[in-house]
Amino acid sequence: MKKIIILILLSTIYLSIQAQFSINGQLVQRFEYRNGYNKVIAQGLDPAVFIAQRLRLEGGYSFDKVQLYIALQDVRTWGSAPQTKIIDGYFSLYEGYAQVNIDSFWSIKVGRQELNYDNARFLGNLDWALQGRSHDFALVKFEKKNVKLHFGGGYNQDGQSLSGNFFATQNQYKTAQYAHYEQKLKDITLSALVWNNGRQYALYDSVGNIKEKEVRFSQTFGLSNITYKKKNSTLSGFFYYQTGRDVKDNKMNAFDVNLQISQNIPFNDSLKNSLQLTVGTEILSGTDNNYKKAINKSFLPMYGTNHAHNGYMDMYYVGGRHENSVGLYDIFWRMKYTINKKAFVALNTHAFLAYAKVFDKTNQEMKKSLGQELDFSAGYVFNKSLSLQGGYSHYFTTGTLELLHGVTTPKQVQNWAYLMLVVRPNNPKKFIGLLQ
Image (cartoon, rainbow, N blue to C red; front, side, top):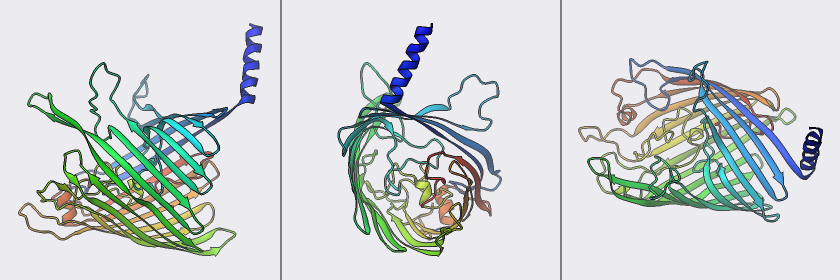
């Protein structure tokens, strides 16, 4: 027995010398009040009130030129499992990958992993949603000073079968390939993205058997980030274009363009006390809601963190809402007051309009206004591990949005509020779901 203990101790000492271990984690607990969140709420419906949480355990192991990483998470709503439950389905693998460093610049990363780039408009880790988003992917990375080039792909199946390769999982690509390039100059940062998306299509007969199947491909490419920063002023934007075929075999011809300017006004450098003002617009193309031709003009920000962009009440492009619809004009104004290194308050305003024409059931054209949204948020950092974040949002709806949501008798008040405790040691991002 003593020999076994000595052997274990020697092995542990040896591994400690030869390898590097890291352990981390996070806990996010969020209270929410939903009274029109994600969809216009109708009269007679009660608001939703709940507490949800994410617990994520992260571990890393480095040996020679290999890095192994694992992140296990439990996502649940308080009360969703009985107190005496032995096991439930809320625990899962969020990330699990190996990265092999070929040399100082090149590396290969294989396994389940986040794809998080630029401002997360098209590719993001969906950090606001407690479950997050990760991909089963193989990735090649080249990083040298101010230049980064990432490219790779993924191929998905429902399981390990003996025959066939039909992919039945909904709202996910069967195969995808992409490349992302970023370069930082003196005052300018430029990024470009190309994404090839293959979705599984199937036609079924009257008894549910597959009559026809194929993989249909669309392509998204563009300048995913253009930022020019000079002193306290920042001019930024992005442009995406989508082509190819959607899963219904419609030809795609869509775009997303954004332009904004920010001005930071410092008051006290020692306290990091400042006011940041931002004004801008985003245009996502759309298709008339009575359009009959087989052309899809509706841009789809497929795998982004959409919560941060078009209003915090998530009326647009979150959870499938507003996809393949009339598009969006988002004219926004943001104000963020940084009180000190630990605290901030912010107020965002949005004016939303439909990009394409909207017709009612009698084929009469409606006004394009989709309403306005006010988003107030605040946060406080207690220490390097603990922060508190909260917010209140109010939506002023219109008849056009109510028609698109299929609501005939909406409540007079449409609002949403949350309060969130964030425990994230060794993570520089102390707040979640906000554009920094």
